[in-house]
Length: 147
Ligand code: RTP
Ligand code: MG
Image (tube, rainbow, N blue to C red; front, side, top):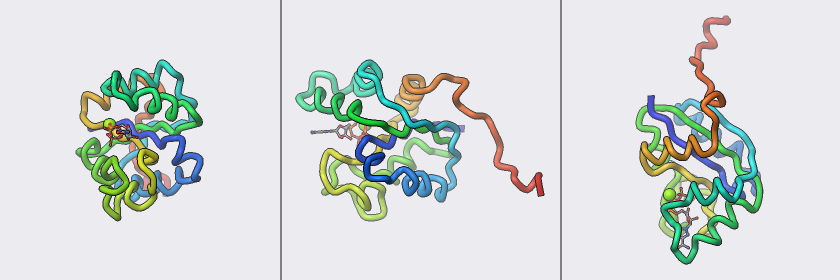
């Protein structure tokens, strides 16, 4: 089953949006397999944003993502990489459509609340950057078995 790395950024945590963002992903039917509130280290931040190294906004990107706690998650589901990106919406708030997380909650670029891996390869690299393999929980949703 496909997995992706989603991260509620410092602005999302500070605005108290963890619960509502997680609820949307649960409502969609994706499965949470790992989640933790962490401070991103400088090293993790530089690795995470390696594709943007050299761009003028890179230092600010690293400074912001390390500025306060983030909520790091791994989600599982069919096509979860692309479907979660659709739910997240476009990078710039002016282009993020209503109904998307950024479209509904973000009002100031580049404070766009949440990160989502842009490919399966990125997802693998990003999950490894933030989680040890043992932190990913293997389980089935089977509450009926207890009833
Ligand atoms: P993300 O990686 O955070 O999920 O966002 P994304 O794929 O939609 O956007 P990406 O191009 O990967 O850019 C990563 C983050 O960098 C900030 N950014 N600032 N000042 C700028 O021109 C600029 N461009 C990008 C945004 O916070 C974006 O989410
Ligand atoms: Mg990106």
